Length: 505
Image 1 (cartoon, helix red, strand yellow):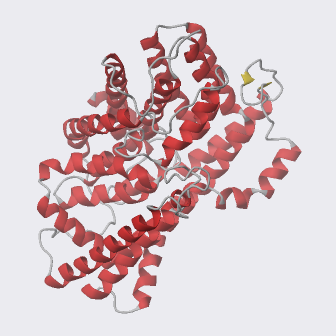
Image 2 (cartoon, one colour; image 1 turned 90 degrees about the vertical axis):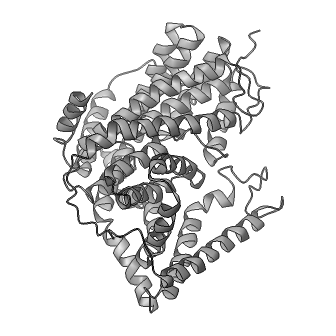
Image 3 (cartoon, one colour; image 1 turned 90 degrees about the horizontal axis):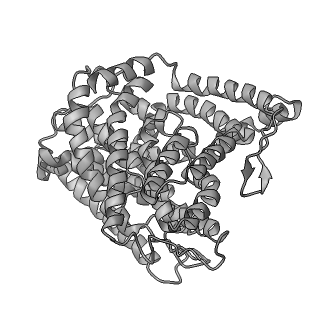
């Protein structure tokens, strides 16, 4: 495995900068769209019931649209806003010393042997806050590991594995449950218009998966990844306080005041969200976890407030802030570190927009689904094939909702026809979607993780991160697939009102 990972790292690091990769891919997609637009395909999109047609992005009309929408394509790139807004709040909390003191206190009560599983578990729990784990938990993983005398890249790897590789696992419902359920139920009703899917249909399996991924990720981190990255010299520009074993009485008072403010804020938010008539709930079904709920739409602003307010309180009580100018300077400093990410985000947004407009991704996804359909494998093998298909498609289409919107109208009715329930099909999809998130540079947050690594090891490239995350991806895929089959064989409930089989009439 060491030789293989060395080869992956060597080859990957020969790739250009992530921004250039997306730029080159943009040119390739545009060229391919011009060629493939002249071909008639017999692959039918189940959403439109029409044959997939590749759009020529080099036509005069398409080029005009691309240029005229360039600004809105960039400003509308969803991860960009999430990262910048969240980092404003987190940057203040970090500059004031609030996060640093919190880590000191946490390290005092957490045995060093349990740092790895703690990071992975917290990373998976961060799914409650949508994509905030990418900008919050992953950089903290590096700080926590470095504070404990361990290599920071191992902390980034463990946190990235939990946030992205364990995306389908969680102890509590998240907005992603509601999002996927909508597609699954619509697809199931193509075959049975009376069929309904519960939003929590994968909850129990997700809880079990959280425990499994925590244990497996713990083993991979300490037996494979950490021994490997420990050979990399830490030569980055990140300024780190080496003394994490003590804190002053003033720092302790500041942390207590800031912690109290944070607890009161969270309690107030819970009190506002608790009533069934709360304005924070979805106006349609009263849910807190559906994507239509105002609280789910406000996750990133809430993270901003939850960190910036305690950060300011800590700063003034502990003496690290003396005026409002210090708060603004802290925001400026956090934004100054995001320059390379913003450049990458521009080209990434342009590529993803072009890839979607061309319909090339739709063609690849549907063609792959047709191949699996014609194989007519046994139930267990079909589920593994479903996981594998999703994993392969995920290399090209990072959005879980986009993939499931394309695959569910074919895969859900097809597997229902052979006796596999929509709920089980959805669980298989979520495993395949999760396990390859951490090795595809086309995943929108992947370049951001490269930037995190470069703060500590300047030579970190795409190949370094891919080789670092490859063991997680492969072992997660194997163990999670087996875990689902064992869960199925034991007849354990997938979730609320979630059968394994669909009765064939």
